Image 1 (cartoon, rainbow, N blue to C red):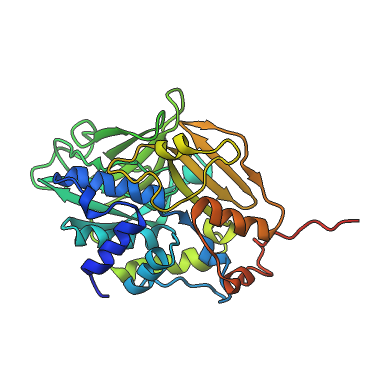
Image 2 (spheres, helix red, strand yellow):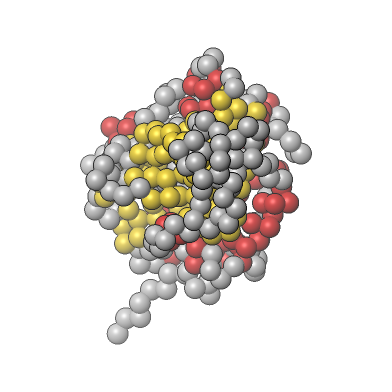
Length: 350
């Protein structure tokens, strides 16, 4: 596979996210919104192949066939350059015009609120519909807008035709907001970054506010230039093997929960991941469930609930990944984490 998916592959993906063509609305923006929410609910954002992997270093494959096999055939997930590249191909196969971009992750994502950003290390997609452009991202954990977020251009753009003076912040800045899973909000702004040395420079910045009384925190900044597969190959290398990479240091898996799932949950189990559960055109996202290291938590409508599980052994973690994320690790993959710093080693008993 070298480009968009074949009809057979597209149908397999749509079955993976429980959203067959028969449920697709005619309106392009409604279709984009619903494909997006179904993906967030059924395909986990995860770093498992970096850890449960016998290969060292575990460089993940980004070829289209490899991504399709992993995410669709083997029903796994991935991190940004994996899930967003497959999502790009899905959207192109559905007839959308897609511009893949790279982003600088904010220092705020690591708890440092100094207005700074890391180097390019994240992938997102921009979608053009009826003369408007939307940000769509399925690969930034819980801090992604659960619906396409429109880019609203300022009255004048420095360096773009008849522009306002570079120091005219009002004329060269714009802002647009949208709802996340209540009470979370998202906004996208076209503005200067702290580290810009050229006064004419601007970037799109995605920010989030998790509660009405909380501060806005920057997620990432991006520009509107198209990135190619080799660009993501460079990002993939640093993310896979860099000692400072969050994905190298932490076993993570996260996906969105739906109102439909919560309505069906059994009192003895918060919910179980079942492909096809809540088969409906419109999913209402209600929260997230996330595994980080040896802890499994969930958040419903902005409220952190009790820890679902504190994990004591690798066998427990493997079982929870299957139960809550639909991820089935092979015996070879399970053995691949042995000796890795992220392996859960039971405490010695006296």
